[in-house]
Amino acid sequence: MKKIIVIPGDGIGKEITDSAVAVLKKVDEKFKIGLEFDYRDAGGASYDKYGEPLTAETLEACKAADAVLFGAVGGPKWDNIEVSKRPEKALFGLRKGLGLYGNLRPVKIYDALIDGSPLRPEIVAGSDILIVRELVGGIYFGPRCESEIVDGVERAFDTEVYSVPEIERIARLAFESARTRRYKKVTSVDKANVLASSRLWRRVVNEVAKDYDDVILEHLYIDNAAAQLTIHPTRFSILLANNGYGDILSDEAACLSSSLGLLPSISIGGITNFAESSSGSAPDIAGRGIANPIGEILSAALLLRYSLKNEDAAQAIESAVDKTLADGYRTADIYKDGLNRVNTVEMTNAIIDRI
Ligand code: IPM
Ligand code: MG
Image (cartoon, rainbow, N blue to C red; front, side):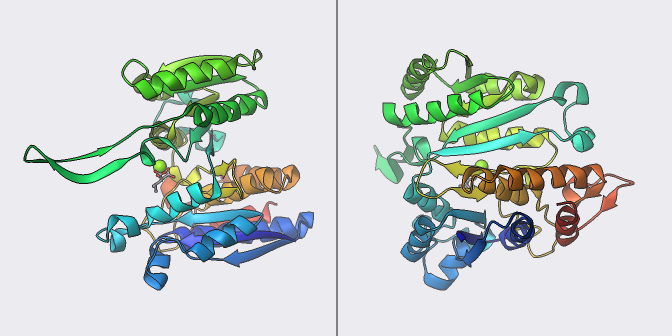
């Protein structure tokens, strides 16, 4: 048996994890993997029940599992609780607790959706990017101060800190990932013209690159990288970034393909891999059954590929999603006149029918 911990979380998390689990059950039937699902709470849902966004019991259950399928956390209901109890803390606690230093976010441009892209088809066509984001260091985890008074004025700060081993392991993951791709290139993003932590980042990436003669390396400043994504997205293959820049660039890159609801992700490198859509909890549409489940369903495919090493099952899901889009099924976020407008469950069933 392969045990998967499912953490629906908040907002649309329940709807999209229901979809991904239904799809996993279908591939399990077909490929006889022997999947077993075990549910836990995190985020606001956990805070409401246990008074904390992530319990030690949940973290332990994740450590003991073969993989984690995560929905989303957060929502206006918990916006005003104290910082240490905020739903997002669950995500950081899981990433750190499981040691997930590498976050992979593949950005794919579907032929069927190309005219839904905010970019002209001739610019975006052929884009195929894998974002490799460092996930447990940098400014999201560095020393911080919520508030202090200095010379009579209030201030706050966060600190960007990276050590050589932290940069080395994420750079290695980026170069290794590049080797599996058609276009063997790593674009490393930093702000080395201004920041000391970025200069170290660049130096270490250059060192690691010496072991990968077959991979092209380029460095771009973060501001230029953000611009290049919109004017020349096909220049990228692997986009390597620290935690903060990777967070921002992955939302930007996801929009190239028309909706954030399409972007899957898997976090690896630690005890148990962790799959989640990048859509967020979308509280504005939660509970209405209209969320796009594709990002979460494709995350389940990544879970099969990276955690359970079942490439056939992963590809079965990916090609079913391709076919479903080609056949004109569209949730509200990607809907266009004349096509088949469906809700979350209908989209899920259409994908299951094509596996
Ligand atoms: C993401 C999300 C999270 C992050 C938030 C919810 C804390 O934006 O996974 O990209 O910033 O890492
Ligand atoms: Mg983000």
